[in-house]
Amino acid sequence: MSRQWKPWLLAGILLAVLTGCANQSSTSPVMQNQVEIRPGMQVTLPEPEQLGNTLIASQLITAQWQDQTNQLPVQLEVSRDKIVLAGFSSWGARILSLTYQEKVIETQVLPGLGETLPKPEQVLFNLMLTLWPAESWQQSLQAVGWRLKDSPELRQLIDDKGDVVIEIHYNSVPHLDGDILFKDKKLGYLISIRTLNYSR
Image 1: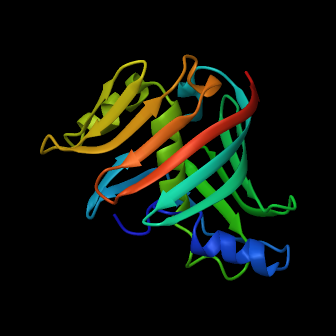
Image 2 (image 1 turned 120 degrees about the vertical axis):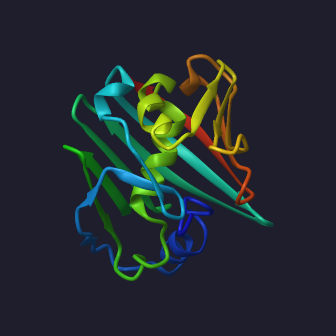
């Protein structure tokens, strides 16, 4: 998978934060609601409403890859027909935003970061894989021979060869009440999601 959510907090975002890029944004072309899960293989994202409820959440996301650790505060809003995700600098400036509505994805990023950040649909894929019910993924994953193995504490994304690609560990039920650990076993990175507050 090219330009995945692997350390999506690392070089690009942190460079922008530390050097104080101008708070201007550029809009990307509209993208369809399919993401690449393997070179040449795509899967369709669930609809926003398939989460089963509305959600507003403030989260702190920490990425660990090799010997680097970086953090990004994010704000997530899910309504019946739309998902909005925004990432902020340490002083509160928005450096990335993403909208998913009517089967298309649009994103805005600070100038100069477009080639450094991962594909926005990949960010959204990881987010939705973590929070959306397993049944909302069933049809699109079955279409490519992949599946989710799910329990209250652990979710595994298993490919068509039977290999575990991603593991998601939940420390609490409801899941947003505790830290969530997202492990990409193929690319070797770990993402920790701490929800600071949320409302449904």
